Length: 207
Image (tube, rainbow, N blue to C red; front, side):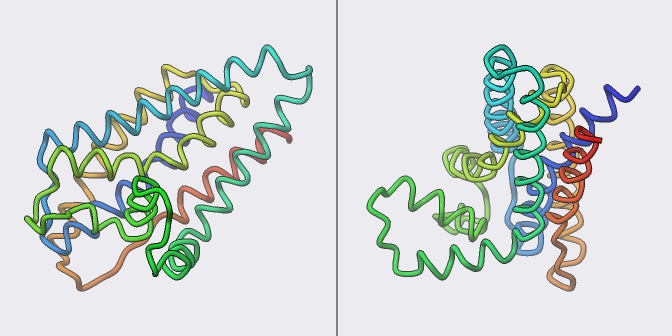
């Protein structure tokens, strides 16, 4: 039972950003068509899976006893960063306001991370498959550390990936519907929820 609970909590922590982004899109009447949604969820799940496989490989390299502390550090750091997510995005918007990043691809990812609405480059009020790929890349960045930390903490790769894909689908649909219903009346940011979950998982590893 604990095995599945851990996998579900990790999946929810990863899907919190998807909810926040889809909610913001919903309030601005920006649609995420099914093909684009599949691309976003597929890329996010793929990045999480690759990072978890890498973490599983580290289990055979790191000294005995060090894996638990490595998992604690990665999950705790990811949790703290999610708790201050809004502050981080404001800082990124300020630092890169002049758009002088030498790498255009990196600049684009940073821009979407700080302002997810900018993924809709053509202002069509629809996220195209190409735009979805860029949005997914920005959303999956924090999944790298989470995936490695989860594997080092003993989480099942298969269980986490299955729950992560399902959670992303549900959270994106719920966020979009809720955003359209509220239509800018309320601003909801649940990135802090994912942060609290990750911090709790990190503490559970060393307790």
